[in-house]
Length: 208
Image (cartoon, rainbow, N blue to C red; front, side, top):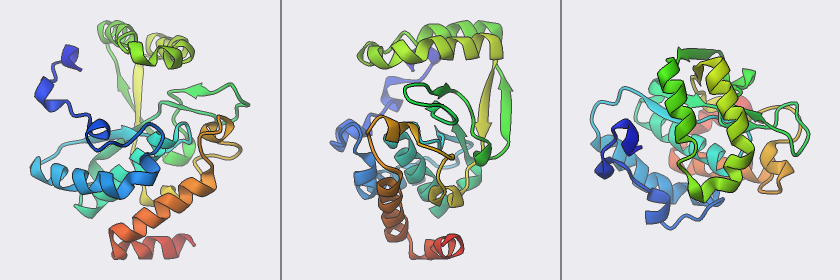
């Protein structure tokens, strides 16, 4: 992040600060939002919020998606949130997956063109995560291919209703990996949703 001009004091690792372990964000949504809400409110005018897509790839990614859009909606910033795909198992059998593939169920994708220079920079930056070497072993070839030959970043708007819809038909990638089940994720997110703001119950009533 420092390589693209972000100052060290602007880089926060709140999972570490709040002692939220890898794979447990869905169990700690209230703890996370107790920090996130006042933090966002302290920033003043916000032009855009980016968050991993609702796609069933990793439980932490989907939990972060839910945390972010519920919080953003509460303070009137939902229309400024955009989601980006990382990986999902849509129409794939384990261990196969799709990389940077926006799901149709999340709405129309906005295509942002990436210059050739930035494509090279972004591909190179994928090698900047030694602690995630095992994950990048599987992801890197497909990410590099998408950046180089695709040449664009896909972004989609977000919807509260999607939190109670299975990201896609078939088995989700985090289910195939044994990380979580859709039923458990839905239960935890729904509990968080209702405890966050009673007014959100109207959304659930329409879905149920």
